[in-house]
Amino acid sequence: MSKEITFKKLKNLLKNSYVPYSKFPVSCIVKMKNGQEIFGVNVENASYPAGICAERVALPQIFALGLNEKEIEKISIMTSSTGFGSPCGICRQFISEIIDNNVVIEMFNINKHLGDFKIDDFLPFQFSSEELK
Image 1 (cartoon, rainbow, N blue to C red):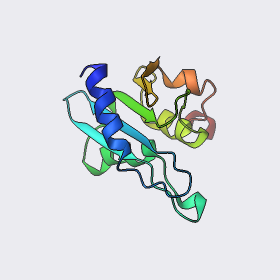
Image 2: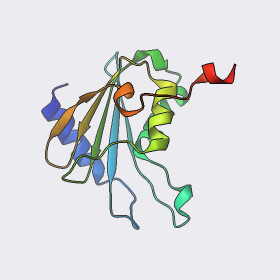
Image 3: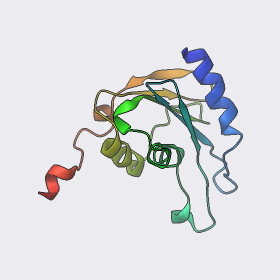
């Protein structure tokens, strides 16, 4: 899928976010190697910690749908800002648990594609299962 098509899909998804408090919609598309796309948007709650980010809406669906996380081709994320928005700390850790370090993370803001990254770019010192041994 071209970046232009991804941009349009992400921008359209922003409308589905439930953000009555921050007014800061975020959308996410997880693209599988078989071409399947899994969508996520952020959903807020009056009890702020109960809200959930777009990345943590999209990624768990892989397991609910019986898919294999090793089949993730890329993750595309859009924030509604004009600056460089990126996954929050919790999402960075969450993403690092699920994806292979070689999976591309495409970042977009409301106006354009900002770049392609790897999880190591966002979280160079990941906490992993190795630390639990």
